[in-house]
Image (cartoon, rainbow, N blue to C red; front, side, top):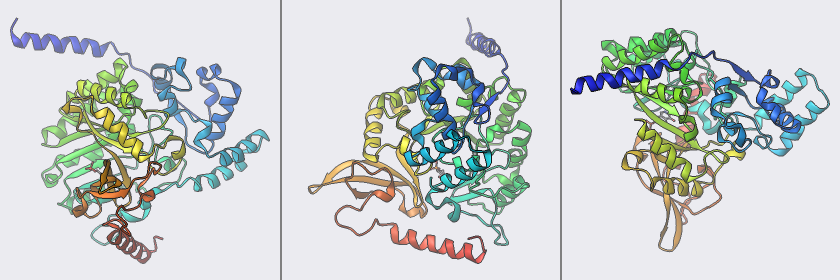
Length: 469
Ligand SMILES: *Cc1c(COP(=O)(O)O)cnc(C)c1O
């Protein structure tokens, strides 16, 4: 058999495989129709009550594919995908849980529950790390551009107005506040034009990172309005287009059988043909998300366009705080042709206490998981904290002249010159975030702190001038 026929044969077989997957209607459940989820009848009344209480404070949304094909109900409540999507009592601090549970028990009206929810959310640090204040890019007239965040020179984050939800919500989401109506950024209706005009006047930007919510929630027609113009000559400085998404896990049908699935793949092809590096930044938390036929078919189809898939996700207690889980996930990602990218530390917001893993333990898990993957899987950096001053990686635990220390470095810094300079914190097995670490060797502060303080002050002065704070 000639080589060509063999390739054709493989392709034909794959197409056949692809066509085996039946289109599926997208159906979601939220706190409003939680009672309609049949699987919940397997759980006791108390558990369902707890779900109702927690989901009146933290956002809840899960789709039927996740419920029927991905969650292993034989393993509930331990099942990682159940933990990833369904609210649990301990996701609220005990006193907050009690306050809300009391209202539900006494049959309080919607208004009272909403009021209490608003109050409790404020106590859950809805906007961590000063994101709200500090990364606002301005146009040529010095006006703040809504829906953009520009923290690192080469990369602009863009939050399209039409991509402000997801196919399901993650219980640990660090952007949870926006799903209960508290926007981190104001979103403008003409945001495609504004984003494009910002890119035109900022030729130093090479990467556009579209995020959300989830941009893949958009119909392809909308997505095209944002991305198609970037194939033009005047955008040749935009080398990379990244799309942050959980759709490959939560709704792979987006790339396989949805009406505009083929069209979105065509859009990727067009961007690739225009010389762009298209990177789908896929959010994965567990290898269990990679097991269904449709999840694998979606990956194959996306890769077939010439787009890369890079995988990232946080380390979470109760979901993936086990080196074996990461080893298997990274190995399977590599074997499916994807590229492991980041292991994140869960941010200091929302249900943080339920999911948090101490930084030292996080590094141990990373270090142990790394040992068992091939070099191609060792592209995953981390554990990394996306903190105010930048992305800080825990490089390890060491001992210097008799003092036990945690070694850190910036992967990204608000000042690019901070990147890749090792620095040292006192060993602290309990610390779960950068602000809980103290400098080693009796230093008063970390090397970047004075400069960072100044940056924060400048940003504040700027925003006060604009009457934005
Ligand atoms: C992570 C991040 C980026 C992208 O950083 P890379 O290291 O290039 O992946 C850009 N902007 C912000 C605000 C980020 O948090």
